[in-house]
Image 1 (cartoon, helix red, strand yellow):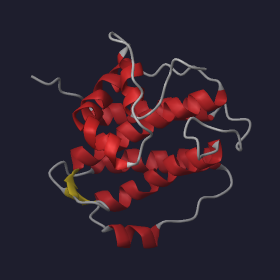
Image 2 (cartoon, rainbow, N blue to C red; image 1 turned 90 degrees about the vertical axis):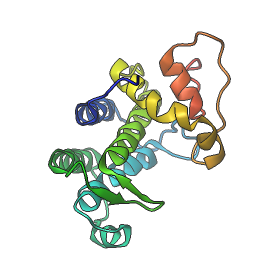
Image 3 (cartoon, rainbow, N blue to C red; image 1 turned 90 degrees about the horizontal axis):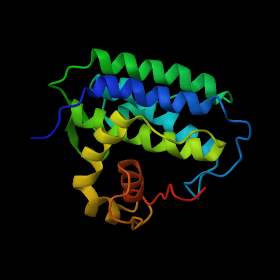
Length: 189
């Protein structure tokens, strides 16, 4: 039987992980493990994803939500605090039985939450690597996000959203396995 996860608690933990790495940014133009993104690009992506959450959770379509989004300001730390809080409040108030309209389908609130937690978790590692911070992620996050990504192993590889999976030796730590599914190799510095 699959372990049940408290995804609301994990959302807060993922946001805490990302926020703690964000405080270490000194060079917004530095590269990240996402080879096409600078730190500014990475942080902007994660913040923009949080902007969508309150709109989509209250029933807006993607088109309606897009019209309501505001351009990000230049202080990305302040933008993160604003939109992280707004997303967290929206998750806490969300109707768990509702469906959410995303660009690719209508999904349950929990499926959207799992997707969001997974995205912020992986990008917390990216940001940690980019700023030279501790890149060890919370074990509960790793275990939960593994339950999202591992069943999609083949789909992830074919999606084009991630680099090709990295082969790992038998018995590699779960964090290494998770990152390897998304084309990230935590064995190199």
